[in-house]
Length: 120
Image 1 (tube, one colour):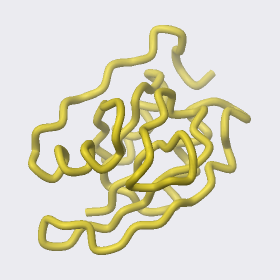
Image 2 (image 1 turned 90 degrees about the horizontal axis):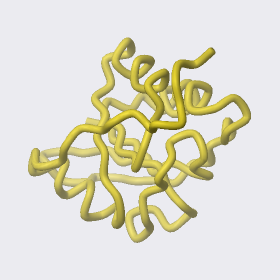
Image 3 (image 1 turned 30 degrees about the horizontal axis):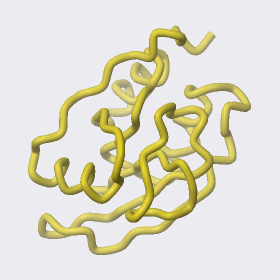
């Protein structure tokens, strides 16, 4: 499992989840082995709202993620993830707690941001 998380800053697991997928400045990319984080790294979101969340989807998919955690996400981005077979989850606050919840299968889904529609 490879998890991607939207970050407010570069603090990785010690940071907070960004509330809007397309506006995050960085992603945490975490590899999970035997139910635990084996490695993690922080990478920049070079598509930060240059074209919205849909462009950022392509950016994070370059890292081979299988699961994504974000505070909010437009429907177009959600549809692109679904088409790519990537599971998406919504959470706010601590990145470490959100990842822990995902690993325990207690993290919920995500709703579309009311201000965003499709990728057009």
